Image 1 (cartoon, rainbow, N blue to C red):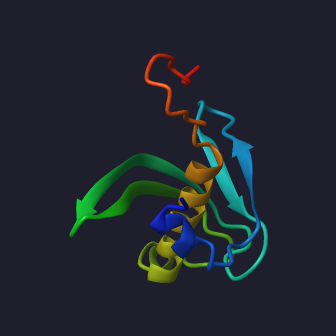
Image 2: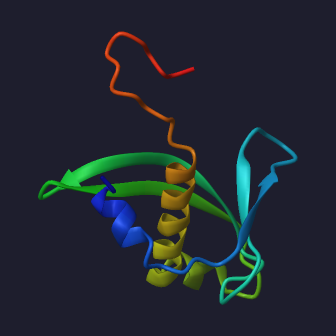
Length: 110
């Protein structure tokens, strides 16, 4: 059975992006490589889930490391950009979700 959030997420077209390693710490950066926000580089901070009316809501903090051709202050208040970052994060979470089985005797986490 496909989760509700996966069905909702599939309808969105995300820009292309790539990962970059920070030269100063172990944080991975995300660089948008096409579309409206091309060349913007950001990193995620704290990520957590909350529930609102029995619907999971993704909450996250972020840092804009390079604003590309955008004004950094306007970018921070751009709801379309923030939503796009949330959609990318959702894609990353789904792609890295561990495979689980229904066997209660054996842990499948490695």
